[in-house]
Length: 376
Image: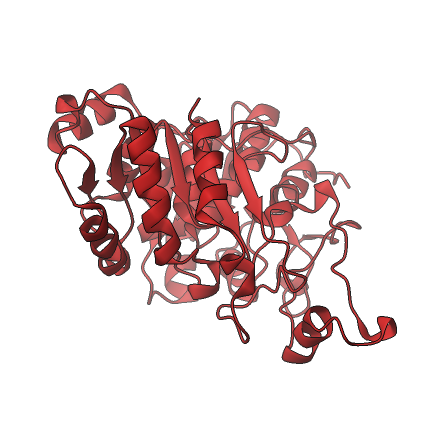
């Protein structure tokens, strides 16, 4: 669907960005296509303060406007009103994000059609025919999938997910609505040589002659997305033994307990591991991920960041679907996406209501081989 914009072509465009790190990375193909379509436009990205540094040096973004976690709709709208934007592209599906743009008085407002917010948009873009919702399974649905003694008519096999169901296409559709090229691109982020050199010195990477591998064992969404620590430890130990790598343990403040456990179990020798969880800014994390030959990670924000920086990733998937939210473009041979064969996967739940069979079924040996393959 392409819409007819009010002439002349928009010169000042606002993109209302999404609120989570991984989702933000998945919007970059749409931003790049928007820049390609309107190269002379000044593109400003509105997003949460915690993510604004993500857009530094990005070729599709000229400027950012941030808001704090507790900031209200009218406060944000007041900021935007002063900027005199011609057009706004609302990437999230929430009513609030569209209301911010509506009350800012931006004349052309484009976003996905959703109940309770269509009145705020001048162009409400219908959902794609091949879109797939990440519907959480109920306890009864999970039981129907995992109990093989049930009669066939009560078993519910997982639906086949088309390639175009990936969330990249959801955001790309909105850029396509203003005439942008609909063909997908790989997500892209930028780190400068100056940033990598600063990180190299700050964290002592210039002293390392061994290959550098990254390990990101956390996941903010919930425990159902986390491969067990008890499996990370033997996998990391075996990979280090076979490659002589130095592990960078990465994550936020909430991951420090996990990374300390892994570091202690491996031995925490200076020559084998650097535990940097909770010690980096977002830009420093990006530069560190750029250094890594491969990143072993759960399905979480840094997974998307690493892939967008060109670093191969190895990811155990259990409660979530790589077809919907996997890193990069599906089919990219650099990445090793390890899917569980549990019949209840993906369930999209934060916590497993049964025995966590999806992640428990992914062995350490399987992950070791995937990391070695990705690191070649």
